Every structure is written in structure tokens, then in C-alpha cells.
Length: 192
Image (cartoon, helix red, strand yellow):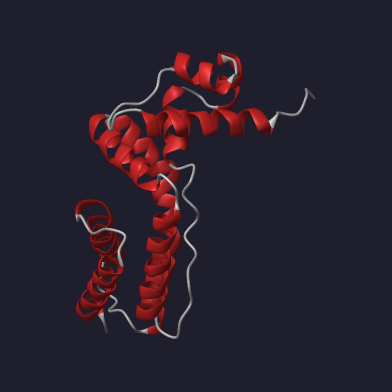
């Protein structure tokens, strides 16, 4: 049967990986030797928990993200607005969260395999719950049946990302208001 895995080791390795990513220049990640030294875990212990170093990097990039909490309102539009407002507040509350966002962008642009792994393990999971809200909109007749919901979600997430990462006033009430307005404007184009 073997002995149970020590979750404390995995937690310690993940914390060390996050700390290393925050300390590194944007676009640089850590070596396995650095991770071993920082975490105090052996290479074997790390490889028992992750298939390779890249998997640790991908896990660390998402370690502090929380699952998207959907806020139900009377309409799909207001549910989306409330949910994204909550998501933005959640991102802004994370200490050092912006640094990990910067690292996700830079490392993903540099390494397509890392970008693919991050998409499969983290982004697609978060998108599924947002797509469920949009699908409900088709079912209730709030959204036209011919609308491509993946495109709608890309547009909403693009506006959110732009307001969070690109604009210098990201994280302010003004940036959150622009995301709310972008969702409302987009909804005008997809409403049944």
C-alpha cells in the first residue's frame, strides 16, 4: 500500500516556487536546484508530486488564484457583471498577484508548451464555469442561439485582462467600471 504522501512537502515546494517566481525578473523562472534549495525537498520528492519542472512552474503560476465564484442575479447579464466585479476584487486582494500575472504572460509568450499546459490545467477549468452562465443565457432566451459563447468569453476576458494588466490604473474602481461597461456593451450585441 505504501506510505501516504506528505502534503506538507507539496505545499512547501509550491510556496517556494511562488516565492522564486516573484523574485525572478519577469520572464525568468527557477531551476530545479533553486527549488530544491529553497523548499528543502529533494528532487525525488518533487518528481513524485509533479511530472517535471515545468509542471511545478505551471502550478506555482496559479497557486494563489481562487476558483471563480459566480454570483447569481436575476439576469445573465447582471450575473456576469457581478461575477467579474468579484473576480477583479479577488485578483486585487492577492499580495503579489500582479507579479504572478506578469510572469504568466511573459513565460507563456516565451514557452508555448508552458502556455498550453497552463491553459489545460487552469484557464480552461475557470472558463467552464463562466461558459455555464452564458449557456444559461441561451437556455433562458437572454442570448441569441447563434452566438459563439467561446468568442463572447474571450471578449469579456480580453477586456478584463486589458483593464487589469495593460492600463496603468488597473485595480482601481475606474478600471472595474470599464469592465462592467464592456460586458454591458457586449451583451447588447448578443441579446436575443
